[in-house]
Image 1 (cartoon, rainbow, N blue to C red):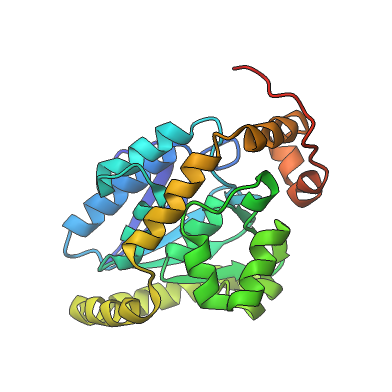
Image 2: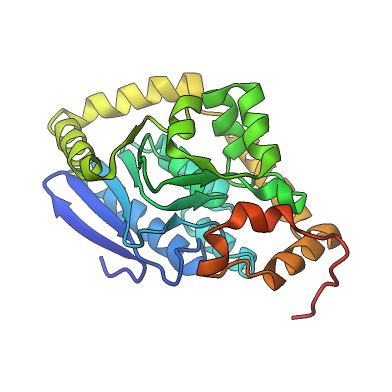
Length: 279
């Protein structure tokens, strides 16, 4: 596979996938295009059983969506799902026969968080991983499935805390809340994930598929719930109120590497009075 934003290395039945979409691993059309191509190719190859996602950027796993290219990345998702929605793309990954594991170092916010939530398992570096579901800072609902995943994983109170606070959470709290399977010292993360992925890959694919099917029957929200969240995000992201807050965020450095190292502080300072800048 020739992919611009993903580097893929194969080890038997495991594909190790490194996300490399500078300057900060925004989920834009190029990355969504490559994720679609990767999933499609892996599902078509019966010898591939496990996908492990990592980041080439130590500060950012997937930062969030590129708010300047919402239509473009949604259109790329439609090439797999038939509908312009990353929520449906992420749900497709959850429902896939493939076993997916996210190995998280650095920041994973917004749709980045929703992507790792769609993976079957999540392991994070205790020292560096940062999690956030920050759409409420713009007056939006998460559009990629976070309301569905987090409520089932954390329970109502913690899911509301995470989504309404739009704050950053470290790996220890993420582990305690159920956002991730486990927080590990960074020095142990590679070995743990690689050992687990290879162990799972040694077992029959039929077992993977039936176990996932039955677990998903209990825990994965219906397709229409993901579709509804995606529609609400798509409608409201174009509203004047959301655009005004995004304009203020951009003026403060939103979608730049340095400013987003401390994004929770930036979001807490947003001002509804900022004029909307024309494109």
